[in-house]
Length: 472
Ligand code: FRU
Image (cartoon, rainbow, N blue to C red; front, top):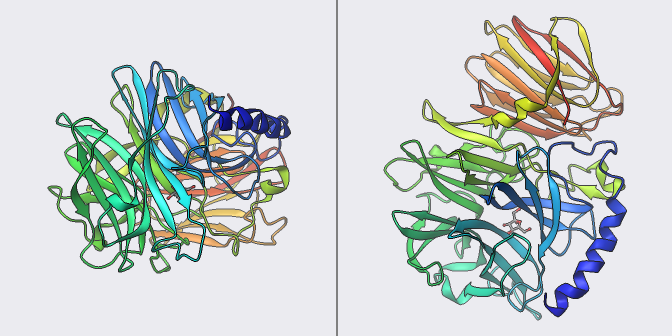
């Protein structure tokens, strides 16, 4: 441990004591990762290593509204029961002194290797886009996920192409055909978002191989890129910033979605499909687990939303969670997302849905499955204020502000066009809702904040369904 870490560990541990009662508190998630205290954003370093799932996350323990970024570390056998393993990465070197930003894990030869962005802000009269910061690719390795080797800076801002600003970050490292690749997201000087693919034979020396960019500018910045094979397809996932908000797409301040690349060819803007249509989803990352599953995890939150949304958990000293890990597959030219099968182990009491009647669920965790028989209007109401509906080809997640207590915190509606409705699955974990439509072809993720500890659910549909109460 270096001197900085020696100072920081007790300081963080002291801070985390403030979160000791959060485990069973109102709105705390039971099987989704939330921070021990303070702020969480992107999932980082997702991997399966030595018999455990390791999920790291962007962590600012000292302020529920964000701040200097560390990596927090969670470990699990089943991606449902998590143990907190502490903070392995601190902003303690000249390459990352203003934040240990996002990155990925790569496991090989009995090692867990991490590649992340070291954020450095320069002091002086700079333009923070063009020259006021450095974004370094940093490497460190571990045998146990807790003790890491000395950090090595592999790439620095001077190494990126001339036409890029200082916003280049979030390395995703993977291996294909015996070579190593690293994908970085960036903002070009002409304000176009793009991604850079580097290649290496040894993971230490990297050469630029390819650039991914749309013919027409598609946002000014692409964050958290990912590139992976799925069945016969290549999927390029990015989190673009700067897309115009519209009624049925790009409804949030920033987006995240994917291009299904045909023969590895350049993506075009019209190929972009959003991963999620809800209020809270950003910066997802995928990994391949030991069963060969491609699993996606997102941040159930968004940056820069303060003007439109205040998260009430801030008053309790924490903010944000990660989504359910979702297994990916391709169906009819679309990537579908299904909650990992492990979730089924949480199913306890089964209740049949009686359409038109109120069902009372004990606790805030449930898994609802509804099969519909026709395109007739469908409506699921939770706690009277969260209305999930389908009518005339439009699927809507809607909060009714002021109805009683405003469980959506002032947020109104998110919509998606869906030609035929066949199935709806809703996973609820206290203050997190994930709505999987038609087997995960479309997903809506949102936080919500009901007052009581139980949930009332009313379903109106030409269909049949059941609700499982969930418990760890
Ligand atoms: C995305 C992001 C990343 C960055 C990290 C910093 O939410 O902005 O691009 O590495 O968060 O916390």
